[in-house]
Image (cartoon, rainbow, N blue to C red; front, side, top):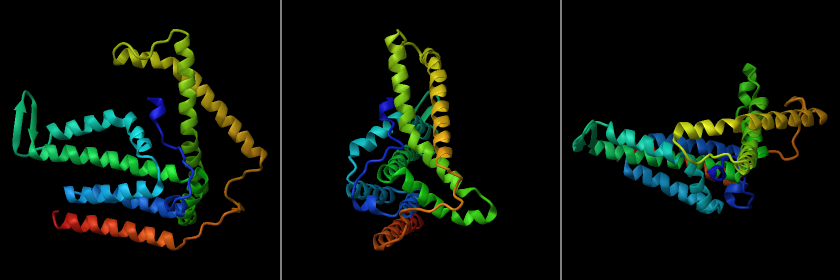
Amino acid sequence: MLKDITLGQFFPGDTLLHRLDPRTKLILTFVYIVALFVAKSYISYAVMLLFLIMSVVISKVKPKALFRGLKPIMVIIIITALLNLFYTDGNTLVEFWIFKITDAGIKSAVFMALRISMLIMGTFLLTYTTSPIDLTDGLEKLLNPLKKIKVPVHELAMMMSIALRFIPTLIEETDKIMSAQKARGADFETGNILQRAKAMLPLLVPLFVSAFRRADELAVAMEARCYHGGVGRTRMKQLRMKRRDLLGLAAGALLLGSVITLASLGL
């Protein structure tokens, strides 16, 4: 299960999506998320799904990697869908005990499952095609106006980038600790939920020790290289918007406009 968590991984490539400016990809991801919450019909979700499929094809990221990333949250998706299925008012189709299935409940459950799945895959596609350094630079550039009100933009962007970068590392460390404890007789797979949760407690201490050690080593390495935040910092690669970025932003605006139009028409 731990190996299925792919958030924070970067798959190098030379596709059109990889070459887009990180600011463009961040804006497109935000527009995509807004459009997902605006979508209210099957036609709207079909448009969103088509946009996602086209992005995956352009990026050349294997769909298997996206679906693997959904496995850890599949339980959340199922529970959310069931809650919408049983507790949405509408024309009753089936009723048993305290549960009631309505036509509106079925529609709401399908839409909610699609919304969460497509949202996760869309955000994963951002990290798959953007390196942590580019993501930091793009986020800092977008949030640059907040510096006027004394918001530590560079520090916030760096923290988010480091957090994304170390998610795969912490997952790998957790897997190693679990394997070591299994070799000593630990059992993480049998018993009820409470017993499994209790069996996971011995993982926390070595995991936290490892995380704090890595954080301390990173801090020492940054200080040894005279890192003092974003003041006076220069970049070898300057971010510049190109024609492909403008076309990408236009595609995002067209997507959002189409979904809003469909929603206003009730389609």
